Length: 394
Image 1 (cartoon, helix red, strand yellow):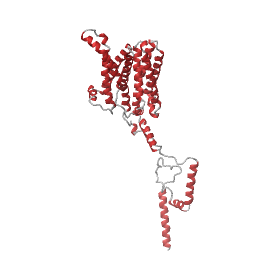
Image 2 (cartoon, helix red, strand yellow):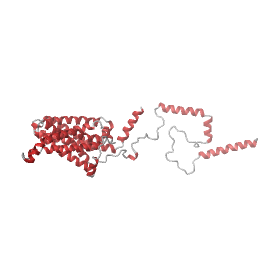
Image 3 (tube, helix red, strand yellow):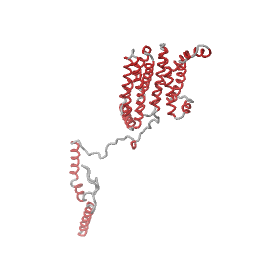
Image 4 (tube, rainbow, N blue to C red):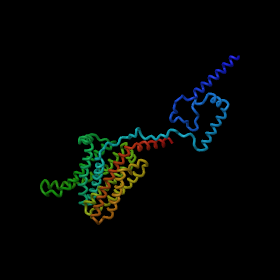
């Protein structure tokens, strides 16, 4: 009996010594950095002597539970609670890399956009001169349309790299492809605009002989060609907007409902500017009215693009794109006001036309730069997608 009690006593002593050996730090060891316990947390197992641990679990277990509950309630009353050691995730992209690839186009493309719109607007101007029998207005529009579509084709082919690539796109007509349809529109417009411009040379030909016959044939051919070019002009002015909006570039795609109207108004304003510069003041009436209409259309829908798309409107205000678009708004508005005020002044009319041309060009360059900027910054892809997903889950 005594032996049994002594063995129990020695066993208890051994377990206590083992507990003490566990709880004592190793001689010469340093505390680990950051090993302080978080406020309100319990020490890890084995960090207290076994006797104290058992005592707390046994005799004081109920009180300990009450104490912990009281501490938690006190933290809730103070509005605190345990602090999160990991900050909330703010995912943008892997390693900060763009999520969508920016359009691989060069600086030729904004020039292609502007000159294509100028060609379309000039064809509409020529039709107005043709129907109203204003020779100077008709001639300026036809010659400008041919020159602009030629330059636009050059910029497009230069961006493609090889001329045969442009020819190869004419092998197939895909109604669902903006580029395919645009190539056919550009080609058909070029033929019609060329025929209409050549017809302007009729008065220079002799009245007799074979050339005299050509002189008689050219005017009706030019009139028909002018109608054809004007019929294709709306498509030529707006297919480039559809081409941009059909990409995965965030700000272009978000502006798909407004961008065609911006480009159409810009094309009308630039075409009207040609008439205001080239035609006498007494013949520039249709050009002035066209300028005001085009400028109003452009400014209204550009305002919706720059202010109505939330986060995706930001690139239209920032950096180089923002500078160009602000200058474009100023020049376009000034040109429209000059068109109204310069009815009897050839100088004011011409200066207003220059302002409209510059504003139209800067609009195309600004829209292009804004789209490229939105593709390079991952937040313009991630944040709208997250918002759309949250809307679906509600």
